[in-house]
Amino acid sequence: MDQIPQKIILVMISLVLSACATSDAIVQTLTNPSPDRILFVGNSYLYYNDSLHNHVERMAQEQHPGTPASNFQYKSATIGGARLEYHNIDWLLKPGQIGVELPFQVVIMQGGSFEPLTQKTRDSFIDTVSIYADKVRQIGAKPMLYMTHTYVAPHRRASQDMIKRVSSTYIEAGRASNSQVIPVGLAFERSYRQRPDFSLHADFDGTHPNLRGTYLGACVVYLALYGGEMEGLDYDYFGRIPKAEALYLQRVAAETVKAFAEQLN
Image 1 (cartoon, rainbow, N blue to C red):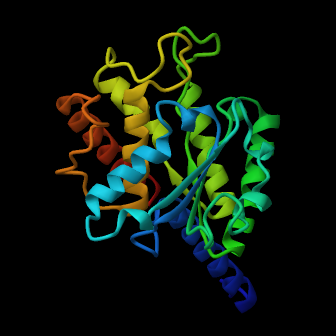
Image 2 (cartoon, one colour):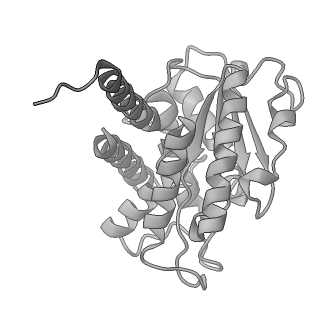
């Protein structure tokens, strides 16, 4: 049998290693195990219910009691109904623009809920993520993607297969941009499979999260940021989430993050 030229072998090895590195990036843990300067960029999915970044920050403060609360600098830049491309990422990343004097360590980006639904908006989202992720890395920060949840009734565009389009879009965007994906949408799906009547959406529109949905999203983000377990977390939004519900949502978040990592590794 003819020998394969050495140059071709080297190219093949390089492609394999590159693919592995990209896949790992989607689920890898942060090199900085305790980031405290974090920027969230998205729309109303993030700012509903006292803003998701506030919940994640309170969880982090509880789980890291040795860190002064003033060290945690979580910021959220949101525009109602926005696509990711509507945000001026250069302005947001500039130190001091939104009250954080040092560069952010992590930037979590969330696209419009409709962006995965057509090829045109999907391609545009992936292109935007790639451009923004490069800008995030230029300031020494880690880019992450907040996978959105799907629509449910009474939303007119609710469909059973929407989660496939959403998850595949975010995974593709993560691979294209070398960004870690936070599988919030998959956590919603897991919860609905386990407890179909346990609503995570606002009942008036079937798109925005209710308080349970925001809490679940915050748990998934927390695990993506800090890893470890959520056992012993007492945070329940000042008694507004019953303890049994909080424990259930923490468990769903942990199961989802673990399953997502196993799926892609």
